Image 1 (cartoon, rainbow, N blue to C red):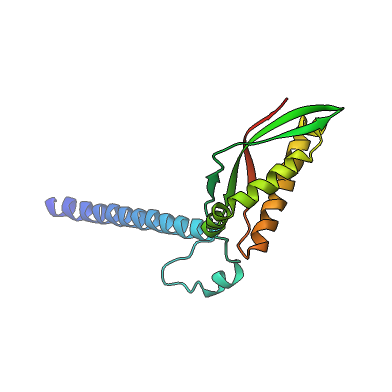
Image 2 (cartoon, one colour):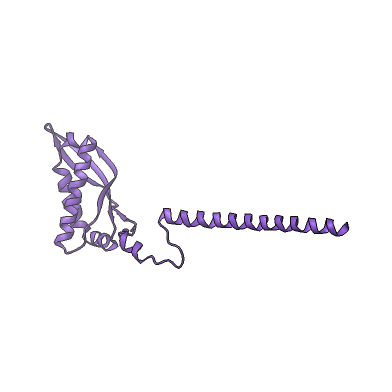
Length: 169
């Protein structure tokens, strides 16, 4: 009778062991499929898979190049005629460029650039300079002027002219 009890318990333990192993395999398979599905969905590549087609389909992303700046130490100060009266304008500027060579060239030709910028500022309309659109327009004119000077000297262009302080009175 003892033999009968022992033989009945052995198959039950084998069945539980098979169930645990099967459950573990199913869980591992689910995890692997989840990771593969996520990588595929996000466009990643799996180790061992040929990613030549994926690289050919996606365009090359532009590399981020940080801007560099120089500050014009002295303010540009000039008079502006407005309704028969003389008004004053004072502007502190910074120049922004992606290419450090453009800023070095701007620093080298700074006397000519300052002279041209004072002329642009002096020829501006006082009433326009009091509006944000007028100041943006002035910045665009100044950018064009600086880039014209640098182009005449055979140097690379700058990206933007920035106002650090802007006063008209």
